[in-house]
Image 1: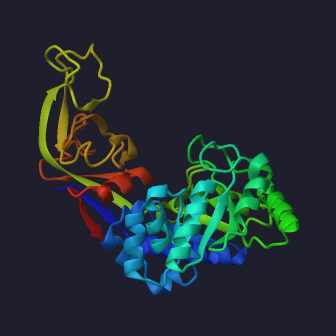
Image 2: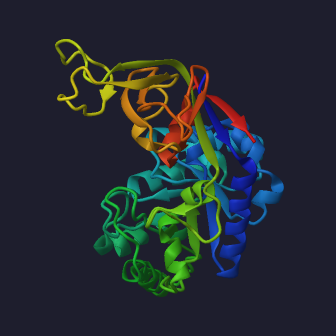
Image 3: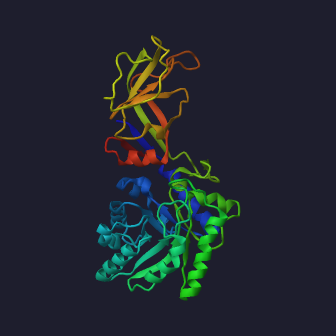
Length: 365
């Protein structure tokens, strides 16, 4: 069985480093656990009281994951990080202390559900800043806020925005300054206080370093930097965070010297994904290894072999074929044999899918 190795120590160190970094800049933050895919062992191994004491809240986009977080620690402040579906409103109120919202109809339903449960549900109103995903249109924000801010069972604790997740729109000083201006406008007009301006994610971290973050941006939602040590703005390691947090290992179950070009009529019946091959390489051969994972487990495009001489040939539901070239090391000896493991560096999306696969062994180190 292929294996995902998770360095709990490295991830824990990243989280503690981020807590210290944000504290030094007077910023609170939520740890976003989407990458867990609801894995209880991962949660229990990582989310210790020591680690959580300097974190504002823990967020996820799956209700089942929030439920497990509450079962692990009922005092944990949880945040549902996408606009809720109306059909799950009661569960949102039960398992999420905070939710991100952009629909009046949904907030009205949350207000009613929270009233029945005897709770005050906290929300962050998301504002559209150009990513064209979730968010109230800027020209409608004032009227929107007027309709929700005095609901008896709803507490508007913040304004937020999401940049970089769909089209990759960069968070800039000018973009985020708009959130600051809306905060000032709404606080003045409605004689209220909006404590959180949640304009930050892993992609926004470099703005802090460069002194280009507006002062009012005081809340970040962080997943990738905590678990992978990188900011998606430049895919570079952020400060001294560790990127050696996950390793994926496939077992070689067959290794043979085979032709490069398939033999026969190629139809559209294939369920697999293949790389382009050189049709001129007829009768040429290369060493091909089959490893024990496939499309059901992970997208191979999200895996990077640590041995840069290896390339993907094709993948099917439960097996993947790799081209090992001549399969020789620098001493002209056989490099890989059946039974050996091949190591890959998985991306954020790869880890999320692997943790969700029941056919992958998880090893915490």
